[in-house]
Amino acid sequence: MFEQLPTVPTSEELLNKSFRRASRAIDDLSMVQNAGNILSDNLSNLIRKFPSFENMPPFYREMADIIAGVDRIRISLSRLGWASRQIRLITKEHVAKIKRSSASDATLIRKSAFGRISSVMRSIEKDLLFLNETRNLLRKMPTIDPALPTILIAGYPNVGKSSFIVRITGARPEIVPRSGLRRTR
Image (cartoon, rainbow, N blue to C red; front, side, top):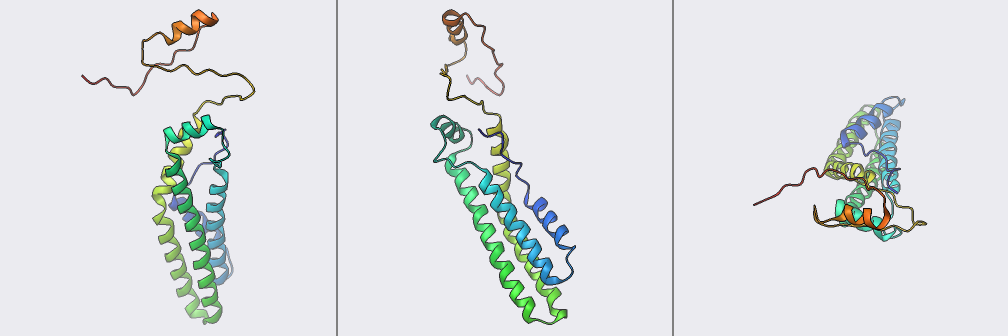
């Protein structure tokens, strides 16, 4: 279900990618357009690649909620959408200014656009980091085939879950060592 989620780059990685590609443009106007379009498109693509939690099977939705919090994921994705729209507005505004300006002022306007775009990207850095961590956790979730009957047996350690499976099925279940669990006294 979540194995197709792409890696979520940091704001610095996205800025470097867009500014590097924009530097190949022939003039300041094209540089602003290219950088803005690249960033906005990358953010929109990240949002689109995350699954819709409304259309997701309940098991996966509940697991995602336990692992990362569906509401928190939605908030981070909506902040990426906000950033994408802001970058489009900044790009449009500065392109119009460059068209009305002299060649010497165009460089200053481009630098202003890049500064504002960088500020927007840095404001969503925590969201990008959270979504990448969430992506890594969700990709580790087991995939369950809805066509096959599935039974989940859960409980405290050492209460006989594996023994129960052996008794009713004769199969030897895989026992995963507990890591990260701590006992408090």
